[in-house]
Amino acid sequence: MITNPLVFVITSDIAGKSRGKSFPLKEMEKRLKRGVGWTPTNVQITCFDAIAESPFGSLGDLLLIPDADSKVKLDFEDGGPVERFMIGDVTDLDGQPWNCCTRSILKGALEGLKDAGGVELIAAFEHEFQFRAGLAPKGEPYGLNGFTRRRQFGETLMAALEQAGLHPDTFMKEYGPDQYEVTIGPSQNHRAADESLILREVTRMTAARYGETVTFTPIQDPASVGNGVHIHMSFVTEKGDPATYDAEGLAGMSPVTGAFIAGVLKYLDSIVAFTAPSEISYLRLTPHRWSAAYNNLGFRDREASIRICPVTSTDPESIARQYNFEFRAADCAASPHLALAAIIFAGTQGIKDKLPMPKVTEEDLSLLDEAALSERGYVRLPQTLEAALERLDANETVRSWFPAEFVDVYLAHKKGELACLEGMDTAARCAAYAAVY
Ligand code: GLU
Ligand code: MG
Image (cartoon, rainbow, N blue to C red; front, side):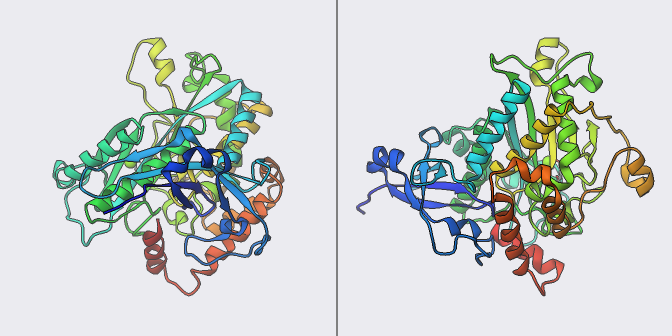
């Protein structure tokens, strides 16, 4: 059949969706300069397709400019089409970043981190997802049997991620029904969020080649576990030297790490509206689900919002390179760019305000009552999306990090999303999200 290969350029938007347009590959040179046309109100298309209230109405024009460094070409060699996509930045017609472009917001946040802390970010996103086909067999958590059942998929996925320019690290059968986890190697600055987006899309494409559907939804069944996004972070100086670890610091934290984490924990109740942004995200963020329910830092504790991860070395130089902490209160309803931006802004505020290094918990905080919690400086994270949005709305510091109008557009978007869920019970809400993420 005749063919004129197309390249799809993506923006990862407020809904955490990859939207964009395609153009003929032959016109790459032109499109790298001019981009494709984009419409402001597209940012108000919710994950359920309804368009939330938009300040832009039918007015305005933007450009979505593909980034040559984000090119993905994927040939499954199965007789099907070659996939080609790129990630772009949304700008106005003069090429200035648009206030609601999540990738540009992230780039701004990373500049701020560099200015305040003299460090750059190294990060890797860890993803959990579930197959949606029928009833999953029992007896498979972390099992060889569950792995073997999906080995062929896993091997294609590893090959596809590698072709896409990522560094596949592990593929495993997670605890939940038909739940799997895939990890990749770290990358620097906004590339880490790009790789998260590429991983999600390549996983979906791989499943489609097998006639399967996967979902990264925050939680499918409130009686079971959720699908988390765990963001591993560390810092390097501009020269590339590790800057996260200090053998003398509490639990190994360097001063910049301690202040950064303190900032994230201080603002977590307000930024969780960006990192865990669906209505059902809050079913996952409950105690004893190995997710995150309090604004605490844990040492190797999988119930903490931020966990200091183990290192596998005894040599000081390798410890300093391996040492990293993991943000656990995120899920795939969030654009990876926006979630990471919110975390970086909060951490940078902690550095600017020279916040003291947070204490490290090694206990079950759900056993403490509210008074005991607050005496120790902890809060239970918001328990609904509405509550999280109210915290965000009321937090002037958090608002000030983002470009003008962005937070109001975001709040309106989320209200539109919530309106789509009215009259649905929990099972129907979970099913609705599972179908779109
Ligand atoms: N599924 C858990 C979550 O929702 C995480 C399990 C793990 O520690 O990998 O975050
Ligand atoms: Mg996991």
